[in-house]
Amino acid sequence: SYADGLDSEDGNKKDSGFVKRLVRRIIENLQLEIDDVTVKLRGCGYSVGVVLQSLSLVSTDQRGNRAFIDRSTNASRSNSELFLHKALHITGLGFYCDEVSKYGSLSTAQHEPSEHAYILSPLSFEATLRQSDCIRCVDFPKYMILSQLST
Image (cartoon, rainbow, N blue to C red):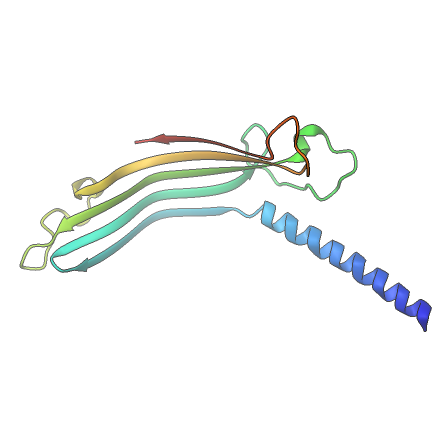
């Protein structure tokens, strides 16, 4: 009947709202941590590679402490809850190019990161992202990224 059709449409809206909030909560709390990565390509007398000591992407509170984020409820939210905070930490990211001797071994030590001929010496990078939920941001930027690069 017509009334049954209205009820099912309303139920679908509730279900899609729930799914939307659930997906948002999962994405906002997604954390990524990678440690000790080395990618090396060898050929034509050279060995090129990328090294990464660690990479971490986490959700934080406004003070930078790891936190579980739940911004799905609009009721009674304080100003600090209008923002999504993320922190990115990269340590020991470097690119190198080593010459391979004619006997097939590297001219420098293979397992010592400090022995590579670096194109970009291992560096560290930190960034924080603050995203606002507001559609129109007048008093503050919608996105704010602060970063620091160090060697």
